[in-house]
Length: 339
Image (tube, rainbow, N blue to C red; front, side, top):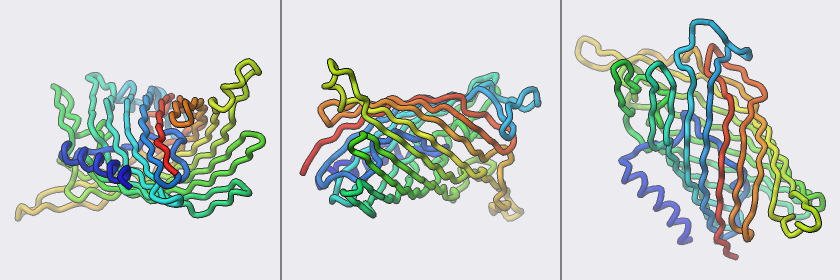
């Protein structure tokens, strides 16, 4: 129990010291596969995550877009780090608390534009809905709340650019959110294979105060579905002591994002503030399918180190948008065991 309160206190302290700055979704970067199921009662896990993503081409629908007079930025790139703390309250219930930080979110206009800072804190309750040790089948569900760690837009002005007018480079939009996830895990012990299916829905609530000067803006909700296959790597006889340490992971992930929304705000004659209706942002919303190979190494049955690449296989965008080129990430988890 003390480890859970340590995790929760860490997140709350970071919230107070950053004066409610924020973590996440201009799209929460998706991490590795270490935190899929529930943990044993009394087990505590610390996880850290780094992701680098680059976008350097435009798509119109599912085709490469060239010479359409639309390109306003040559490329976009971000670097992101996060920490997740997990604790097994019971054998069926795991609590998690995490937060993250954008080292940079850059769009390369004629004058490059860069934002940085905290995103959201995320609090998660994960419960084992079904577990059959004979069939090696587990079904787990989770519910999460997102708490913004930033209450106002970042303002960095140059002679030609004010990033307060560009939500794509903001680390957080100041809006709350909720997530629901379902995990299905199947294991075949004799072959060393494990199968995972994960579905995650993320809902972003509208900002109440009007985050930007000229309008309110809300990133679209998302639905992500991932299928994993993992297998222990069998080494030659001379290296057989490594057999249980290496795991190869192949993932296919589909990311569906609904269109962003915005509404203008204006003052009427009495000086009161009025709002237009919410409307969809034209060049937003997408469907992207990634292939994500990953390799994991385990030290002393407690420390997991993994490297993952995100390779887009299919991309379809509503309107004209910067498309994904590639991304790579590193994930570390350390378990403090308790029976």
